[in-house]
Image 1 (cartoon, helix red, strand yellow):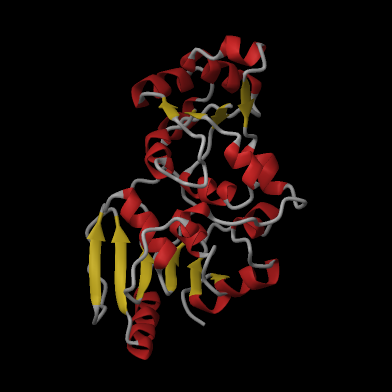
Image 2 (cartoon, rainbow, N blue to C red):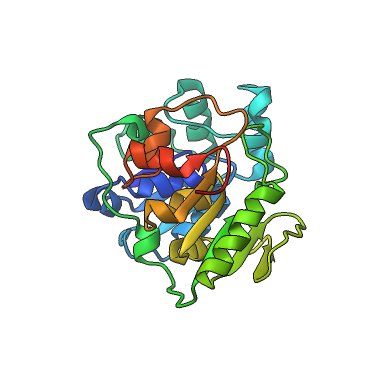
Length: 269
């Protein structure tokens, strides 16, 4: 069925892990009503867990920005037309030309926020982990905060954080792979630095890593789908607003108690 969805990259990895097999198989076309739809489209291509997905559609960035100006000027840099906000949804339907499909019940929507808070929805599996391009290399994945993110809720990676990662690398003998969207020079003895790598490569790096250390990002969410709690080190933002079920459930299959153990104000044990 035609399916309308609006979310971020980390949200996609979360959503995918709580959708049922039947829900995944029900999707024949995806309409990405969000700024990074072009990224999601690439991530979802040739995913065997969505066997009936044949087409994906996105909104041009400039078109999305212009349409968002009249709804919420503050949100223009990260525009989105969520189905749980009626005015936004109507704009999204119009941009895709889906009004008739919606009226005729030929379109389903994914209300991601409601699903994220729905504690009756258990972890099923991550199709991105299940269908990853396997890598036999052992490594610690480090993700630096995005430099252009239009929000102030991301942590800063410090020298002390990097010192712990270097000690972990020495302890395990594993190389550190650093992902960043800007030039960085961490004091790591055994390191490979990737600046703006392809999103599919990033996805596979997160789906195969032995350890994850870094900011709260889509990499941390995907890594949590296959790593034990002892192998995850996520640094929360100094502007952290508190625990809630959405935050806990983003890191399923880990329990809230386990999330509190690896989601801390520093990277370390």
